Length: 88
Image (cartoon, rainbow, N blue to C red; front, side, top):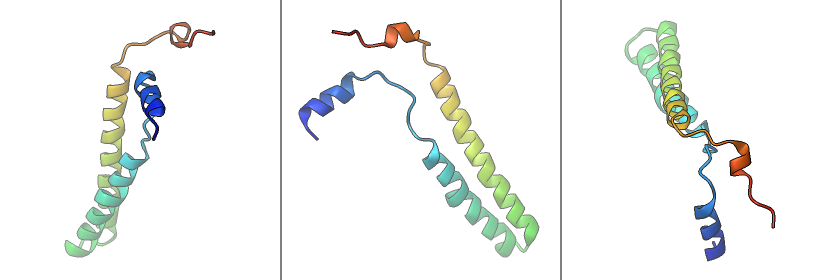
């Protein structure tokens, strides 16, 4: 990456454009699926364990999205006219 691009990135305004997909993937695949397998087959709960694993994954995703919402909404609201780059 050239130094000019690095400088451009540092001077760019901080916008909440980070993807939320990694948080959803972690919640569903890294927490929900193992919890479902452990509850269904390890604890012997069967289909009920699968559903509780689904609940664990959804709760993790909801918590990560809530944390992101709180972090983004705590920023100062800047009018669009103030954010627009000046022509010329």
